[in-house]
Length: 351
Image (cartoon, rainbow, N blue to C red; front, side, top):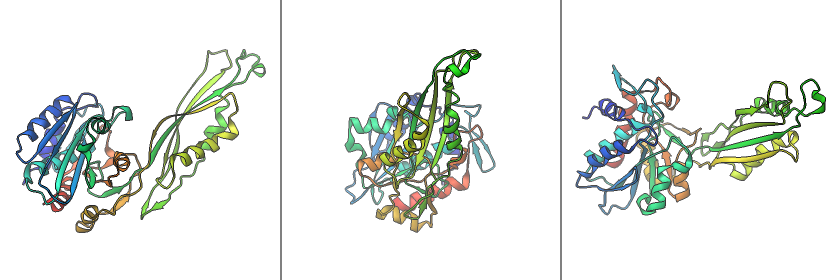
């Protein structure tokens, strides 16, 4: 049996920070192009490999190749049954599982599409899945999809929407010796920040999965000089909303919260939005994965590309090795038990 921890360490040692995935994808392409049962297609720094066996169903195994920037953790280190290194959890452990399936299962019981895409860890406008879809959407056709995001070998269903607002509050300049002659835009932030700090999260349960919304101030700027009352302040707000709300409902909620504290001279702009995705676990392959392996099922609190597959009309869920809570940290790591459980469930599903 393959040593999955060592295989993941090899991937960690192949750098692939966002926008610098090219050499890593070159290696992936070389590895997969030599497998006679797979047809490979390269689009930019994205790679798709597919079987064409005429099976009744097609399962997509999908993983992003990029990592966040290295933080003194660029070299893999294995201590006992733990691998340390950037991307070990998010998500080179998932990629190692998919690669072993691609290599070792030449005649899966369902047709398989392996999607290795670039630039997931950066802005939506750079996303490699979107690039594949624009170039050749047929490459992403299938009956259902598994995204190898770190879930520690459990199912994290759906995802929450993510919406960022930029709120610009107006004021009037004055000398700080006579502040009553102006209007301090920074001071106007106070009641908004108080409402944000007092926010109590909604926790709706959808198809047995409990989501937890969030509303946070994530950036503040303002000020002119040390002796001038500021005439403008900018606040950025990040809102994660559960999939029982539409984007319009999520936006209305934030605007209603801000309404008592803003007026006609202010502006509220949505600067980024990624839609939510409801749990999509009714497809027979996904149900089999869960039931045959007694997998725990919970809600995905962050955003992932399962939402993009929902837009494509393909049910998808998050299933991979590694602990999401250590992703992007200097101490990112992966336990052997996590990746072996994940790999075993995948092999049971496709073999």
